[in-house]
Image: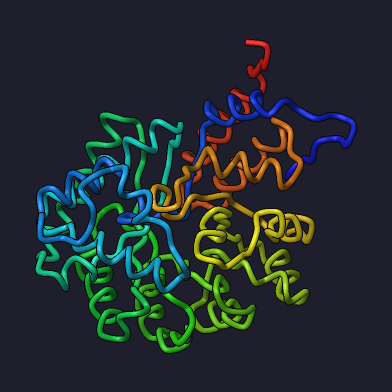
Length: 354
């Protein structure tokens, strides 16, 4: 349970930011291509000058300003087009791990969309070898454990679902642990993907679809009933349905909350209107995540700082929030114990005066 700060005590923002910066963390909702930093995007764009993506990191700031969710998808796919070969994929993946390590992330479940690359000519075997090579190197050199969620790009329809399922179930690499569904929700009903999720679950993968971000709570219900979701990506609209909140809380189905992303894609109008407090007060297991951090000019530390403000948390409450991600993760039991112990030790040793 998250511990809220007492009303009479207001921690210094600088103290909390420093606490968050050093806090060991896990991240459960962060996208592979969406984590490409401006430096890496610019490098890839320079390598592929026929791309529409700016080569200048400063120009990328305007390029990554979205008018709505559809525009975000358009820009996102233009960055996907920069991944032309396995070396591009390997470079991106390892640099993502470097950024995670900088934020004291010990474990991350990275959402990867193989179809976006294989449909553009990268062989599935080469793509998988590239991400696995980066994963192994990241754990050895940076101390970051990466695991994969292979997701269906919903906008690409059933052919993409079939190819993603084939790669996941027949070629799935060692780091693969779960199966998701991303992209736009409007016009992309969840139930049509039931056969693909059934096959992935039968192959031992966990179900973690996006739902209820730009559509209503009925999409979350569809993800739960048709796709047997064990976690929900976003789930922002769940607060509109008290029965759904009760169900999520009772069955300990976590929500992967990404506050800045919800503002950038216009899923939520204003941060002060974000429903994360309603989720927590309803007893839902909430985790904080960054989604597509460079595209939204954020990172995981910033998202924790936002959550701390919205939830009126002190250091102990922030540590509880970090432990929620450990609980909701698909780490093995020893890994969860180690990371929880590290979070507890960090909180115990924390002294804002130094």
